[in-house]
Length: 171
Image (cartoon, one colour):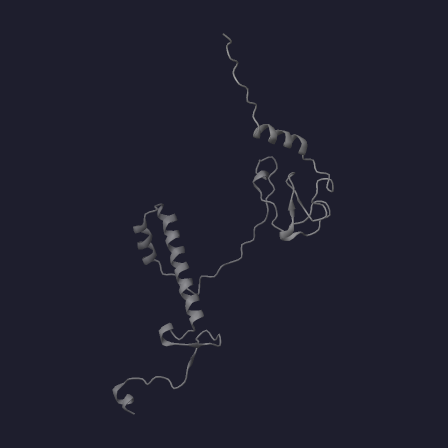
């Protein structure tokens, strides 16, 4: 009853649910949100500030830290309005432009070159540069074009250079 006279509010009797209705309990220290929702909100605010500062750098054409801080302070971006939009990228086929060498190969599942079997982490890389399964890992099983004989000769020649002593002058 004394609270009504002084104008102070009494603390709630029971625990407070999160304002995002996630099912967890919130607290007054985290603006009546649970810890996860509060952390997500703080992360979104930081991303919005970074986006605003990078936008300011692009518009101003400068890279100094003082301008980024001033631009970030001036721009107010509502947190709820910032949502990532899906970007649809359609491949452009430019014939003769020379950009075909810059494209990356598809990062799909790793497969054996001979039988097209999925190998995952257990694939074997051959000296010819291809990936094979356990059955086709040997060079005679996948018709390997790598020349082992020449590679062996070159390795021996490199490891054992020819040493020839200078001829002595006879007296």
